[in-house]
Amino acid sequence: MNPLHVVILAAGQGSRMKSALPKVLHSIAGRPMLHHVIATAKRLGAEKIHAVIGHGAEKVREATDESTVNWVMQSEQLGTGHAVAQALPDLPDHARVLVLYGDVPLIRQETLAPMVNELDEQTLGLLTVTLDDPSGYGRIVRNEMGQVTEIVEQKDANDIQQAIQEVNTGILAVSAKHLKTWLPELSNANAQGEYYLTDIIAMSVANDLKVSVSQPANEFEVQGVNNRLQLAELERWFQRNEANRLMTEGATLADPSRLDVRGELIIGNDIFIDINSVFEGRVELGSNVAIGPGCVIKDARIGAGATIKAHSVIEGAIVGENAEIGPFARLRPGTELASGTKVGNFVETKKAVVGEGSKINHLSYVGDASLGRNVNVGAGTITCNYDGVNKHRTVIGDGVFVGSNTALVAPVELARDATIGAGSTITRNVADGELAVARGRQKNISGWERPAKD
Image 1 (cartoon, rainbow, N blue to C red):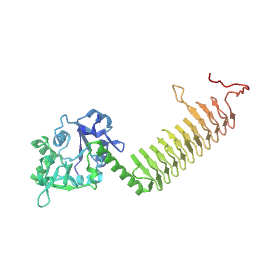
Image 2: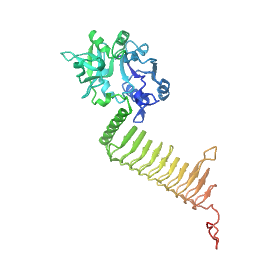
Image 3: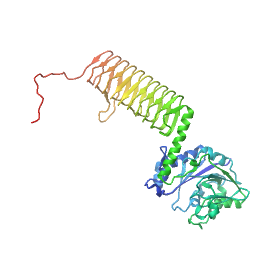
Image 4: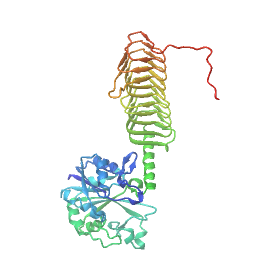
């Protein structure tokens, strides 16, 4: 089979977005629209992806970390046919070419694969959609045998043609050899004064090519984004599809309309996710995990049976089985919690490795630290890990008890079963089983009078 090249048109200004950001960089599900299209092209097995850019070209390139993308400049926006023509020098004659759009982000691989897989030099693949209201779209004109003969843009269509409900999505596939013959022959003698890519349909018919038509499962797949209202509409459609997938795979969602997946969410069985939770990057939830309302979880792995209570934030962390997090906890990158651990309300951890059964229950900061098994960290404890230049580590052995309001000044080590008295500032190592108390002596003054206002 001839190699597949994908041309993505992404040069438009998007003035109706009312934004300095190029239109194709506006996000759906936490990713720029263009990145969704590039990912789909990759899944199709494209040998090369060509992105035609113009308005805000440098911003688009800077935001797209894709070494596999060949950037093609369109200095003047003279229509879709002109845009594809800019990529012609980079297309091998024998290539199959699929044309996609950077502002049509949710087109699925499953919809495109049959069209490109069946493509040969005697076929042009065309994706159409039937709409209740076709206003604004090019109409698909068929002959008495039902064969496609041409596409007529709305501004050029007569009354009979405007009544047609089958419309052009702009997505098509054809041999590069034909594109190189037809695109130079396009005319801009139309109401828009542009070079329409759709005119090659009539050219293909004139050259006895078969126009093979397919349609998407849902019209949202081929819906473009011209303003923020349409952007929001596609966002909710995407998220509802994710919610449906999760429920099918074993999750109970308190409200499927109040969930945001902005990456890849992998789940086990019997998951519960409460309202307004956000998942970013790659997140794995083991079986029987419960997520409370308002949680934000990014690039994390949550073990089976863990409970994440309300409004907790987890990023770049590993949470062990049957752990209990929150409410209002923050696990920062590098946190690794073993099974049965507890990190409670208003606790923050960073690069903290916490052993099985250990507890950090209230109002503490534990960073650059290693905690053994069955450690109990009292409220208000902090590891003082930064000296203004370097970070230092705190090591806490199995069974250590740290009293409330303690400052552990790293580097420092608390050995097995040590006890730290509340209110202490610990600057030296504590040996096995020792009690360390480091605080000023209390002094009570009798007969003292509290100052009074004049």
